[in-house]
Image (cartoon, rainbow, N blue to C red):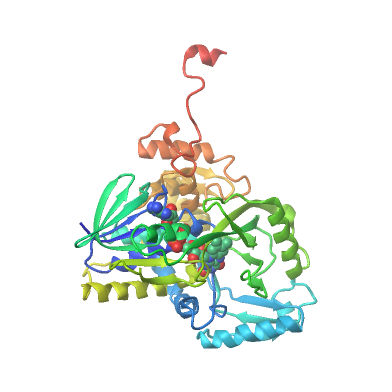
Amino acid sequence: MYDIVIIGAGVAGGFIARELSKYQLKVLIVDRQNDIGNETTAANSAIIHAGYDAPADYLKGKFNASGNAMFDIICEELDVPFKRIGSLVIGFNEEDRCTIQKLYDNGLKNNVPDMRIIERDEILRMEPNINENVCCALYAPTAGIIGPWELAIASVENAMDNGVELQLETEVVGITKVNNGYIINTNRGEIKTRLIINCAGVYADKINNMVAEPYFSIKSRKGNYYVLDKGVNLVDHVIFQCPTDKGKGILVTPTVHGNILIGPDSEFVDDKDSTATNADNLSFVRETALISLKAIPFNKVIRSFAGLRANSNINDFIIEEAKGAKGFINVAGFESPGLSSIPSVAKYVVEMIENMIGGLKHKDNFNPRRRKVICFNSLSEKEKGELIKKYPMYGNVICRCETVTEAEIVDAIHRNGGARSVKAVKKRTRAGFGRCQGGFCGPRVVEILARELDKDWTEIPYDSSKAYILTEETKNNQQDRKQ
Ligand SMILES: Cc1cc2nc3c(=O)[nH]c(=O)nc-3n(C[C@H](O)[C@H](O)[C@H](O)COP(=O)(O)OP(=O)(O)OC[C@H]3O[C@@H](n4cnc5c(N)ncnc54)[C@H](O)[C@@H]3O)c2cc1C
């Protein structure tokens, strides 16, 4: 019997698991996907917001700035890419100036440090590519950019290094309340646990309704994005427009890996799993982004994608014991700024559990640090040479666009919570993230996965366990080969 089962291995479930791994508890994370951080955590703006947006009396307002302040230490411990580059909310008229003043005042209530309202000349000195009719901006230097799925993967790996268990491809289909806890029914059998933490993203309402009163609902709100190739020097800060009732609007930002990200729009969709992009919505993103900047080289687009916000009817995070289900905690409606708030939210959830259980015992041997990930491309020529001499697999470049070596891919497969699909390798090493989008390295990654996992090539999926790339050999005997 587990003390706690966490449903969902996105950034919420992953980070809470890591926080719980500090204590003497038997913890399991389950996820229906074949990788960590494969849903909303894999498709968002990747901004660690400063925290001036949400009203101070909302949980979103309460947890954002405090979460933001924890990222330097966390990302250092977990070896996750994070840069505190600051953000600008830019305004073009008096109405925007009023909005910016309100954001500033709200930021003060939310304890956001060091914000300033700045004027046209300073803005254009900081960001020469911004449209010259800009008049003012809210500058928040504490805003940052992060690798969001890297954060989830690193959190789960560190949690597992500290004793937490992970079961992927395990879909929760029902939950039964029993005397001393719950029985969770999954496609892989029953799991017994004292407590449950529901971090199921857009499906958190469905999981809640399996055992508790259906007191909230979640709709998917889709956002489409463009990604520009590396080497486009467009902006140095996160550039927002003034927010509307649909959200924070279209942003233009560098990513931690040196690309430019542009998006997202906002549209409710009926299909909770649909992450397909839409040409009309992308056109809207394109046109709206051009309000912020003088010119954007859209001929440098290498990819578009879409993510799904878990938008609840309550319009705030739902972080509480579910109504009518003792020991069942919802971390639901966890849309933006969920990523920015998670360090603070995780501590809050652990406090809730401490109160429920009546005290938690620390582990003496908790290790907060994840083993460093070697990124060959970022090393000096001397370091590269030394590494190749010691481990020749670093001399075999698999992804030419991002210079990812065989040794990095093998390492990504064999870590706790390691890669099992081509996309999982991509998320961990960036093989396939470059200009050719995996056209060249894809088959080599399949080959390495099959070899390291002792599987047939046909058993290696691109993404989900059903997304197979190869189905059978086409030339499986001498005669076929001659034809
Ligand atoms: C367009 C967009 C932009 C955003 N931008 C930002 C931003 O810049 N900054 C910021 O702070 N936040 C941002 N967010 C919000 C942020 O991405 C989310 O708060 C965060 O990723 C949510 O993580 P999660 O773990 O709750 O959900 P998810 O990552 O979706 O994880 C939920 C997991 O639950 C699993 N699951 C679901 N049902 C079941 C089941 N029945 N059985 C087992 N497992 C199940 C899923 O497989 C999934 O892995 C953005 C979101 C979107 C969509």
